[in-house]
Every structure is written in C-alpha cells, then in structure tokens.
Image (tube, rainbow, N blue to C red; front, side):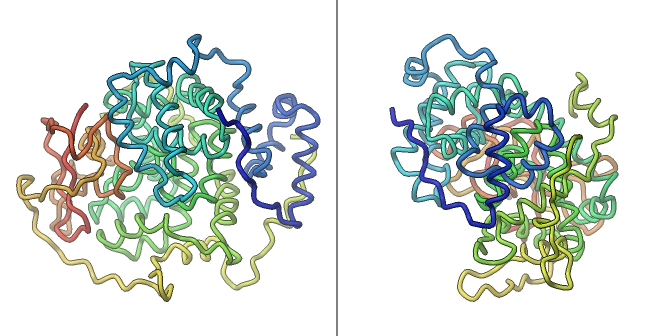
Length: 446
C-alpha cells in the first residue's frame, strides 16, 4: 500500500523564518512543545502549518499514538462489505470532483477508509459529509491506514461522530449554538436574515456538515482545518462568526436569492496570483477567530444533554502588515467574495429579488440526480430564536428557505441517492422561494 508523502509545493523564500520556527518545534518534540507553549503553538497554527509538517502536526494534535484504535486489522475492516458500502461507492465519485489528482485510484482508497470506519463503528456507519473529511485527510497524508487512524480519533474521541449519527444530534446543537452566538456578535445580520427568510441551516448546514471543506478553495480549507484539528470542534463556531462578520456589509445589502447565490459562490474564488489569494484569506480569517470568544453559557449548552429542537510572543507584524490599499483587510476580503464570471472576472449582475407567494410543498419540482439527505428537512426545522417557524410566511411575503438550498453535494445524507428508493420524512419541509436557483431535493433515508 503506497504510503509515500504527496508531492509538496515549493515553499516560498519569504516563509524561511516561519519554517525555522516549525523546525524548532519539531526538533524539540512536537507533543511536548504543544503542552508547554500552547498559546505560541496556536498562533503559529493560525498562520498555516507548512505543507511538509502538516500531517505530522495533525497526528500529534489528535494524539494518534496515544489513543485506543480498533483492534481489528485495517485490511480486514476496509474490505468487509457492510450496509453502507453501496452508498460509499456512490459518494466517492462526488468527492473533490474538481481535483484531477483525486482520480480513480484515490477514490478506491477513500472507499476503503470509509468502509473501514463504517465496519468499525456501525452505530454511525456512514453519512454524506464524512467523505469530504476522510478525503481531505487522505489528501494530506497519502496514507490509508494513518488516515483511518486520524479519522477514528476525530470521530470517536473528539466528538465529530455526533455530526453524523442518526438525526445528527450534535450538528443540530451546533446550529442552535451558532445562531445564539450570531445573535450576540452580529445581531443586525441575523435580523436581516430573519426578515429575508434565510434560516441558519441554509448557510451553516454545509459549513458544519463538511467542516468547511466543500465550501471554500482548498488552499483556504487547509488553513481552516489546521485550526480545527489543533483547537478542537468548538472553534468552528468562532470560524463561522468570523466569516459572517467579514461578509456582513455585503450580506446586509442583499435579498434572499442573492444571499443564497453568494454563499454558493464562495468556493469558486481562485485568485491564487493576487495579493489576497485564498491561502492568505485563510490566514487572516483564522487570525480574526482569536478575537472571538464563545460565552460560557453557549459552551455549557454544547456540553449539556439538552437536545437541540504565554511565553515569548512571536513577531507577527510581517504577516499582519497592511495590504497597501485604503481598505482594511476585512473590507478587501468581503469584496473578493463577490461572485465573478469565469471569462472576464467582472461582478455578476444579480437581478433584484422578486417577491413570491408561498407555494405548496407538493408543487416543488423533483430534484435532479444529486446527493440528497434524510436530515435536510430536520435541520431546516431548527429556526433561529425569534424567527418564524419553518413554513411560516416571512414579512416579505415569502416562505422560509430549506437547508437544501445549499450547494449540490453538500447536504446531509444518511445514505440516500437519486437511484435509491425514496422514503419520505413525515415532517413537512420548508419550501424555498420560487426564485431560488435550484429545486429542493427529496429527503431519503438508508
């Protein structure tokens, strides 16, 4: 089984100082350094872990060598067919389809990793979204067995499996917790979303279900994931709020359809040659998360059983330097996420929102062949505090959006596919506005 490291891009010369810092940590024993100098370690992580050290740091952060792993051999777990194997075989083809390097060979490796986890933990099995997490780990490690080990650590020891269990209990709690945090940190944006009928699940569902992997350019995702792996799952709340704070001014000027399109377009930003390339945006966003505190009452809510219905300071001036324009980086970043056309890169002109009357659920057209989820309706049914319930008419005379407005391939699926027989959720789903770009997908169960 090939375990050679992936081909690494050449490190820019300007990263020489940063590389020396990481060499120092590695030479001093990484686990010991993390324990003795946590603040300094996390500051460096937020600037992005160098490619050549990323997997080594991730393994140390999840304590791969210290935690109990499955007793059964990986070769046996990975080849044993189970109830989720056919569904995994479908979804591996939908994982990183834009990456030429994620070819048939990589897809088969991903199949074995996901199949091994489903065999190891049948209580969770497989849920769509897990394919992007395992796929990203595989991209970074290029080692199947270590990918499986880190996946087990994240899922079973660090709590990520709660995002993918039956009825997605932890994901629902995080949606509620994030809505509470948004209400305290960017209340005007939350009120704007309520007026426009944009429920939290519309934008948070995909962010949290794939832990941002299928939402932003890959170079930006790598830096976001450096922070998630090294700081733990609750940091996703700070990341989500950071993104909303950065984009607040743009989002406040938009109506429902424009907001939905805006969130979908963020993954397509690819100005890698610009001064604010995707990697740099990731660094700045992660720096911003350090200034956001999660109130204790929200952390207590996450820890509760309530169901969801430093040493020497681094010299950071160089990488935080002014970008040379009159705009601050927050304003520049917000401008960078304006939708672009592929040919001339001019802003897309979005037509004004048109008020629509509520349509009955039965009138919603069938979805095209695409991943669909048993959880989408459940998640859409978690309204923000003070907002109208799903299906209720908003002040604009429209109906609250369903979480299935998220981009294709990102909704939660406990094993559903366009080719499988449909089992409808008995709870009626919220109906999206008539002018939304895509029809709602049907909810299916495995």
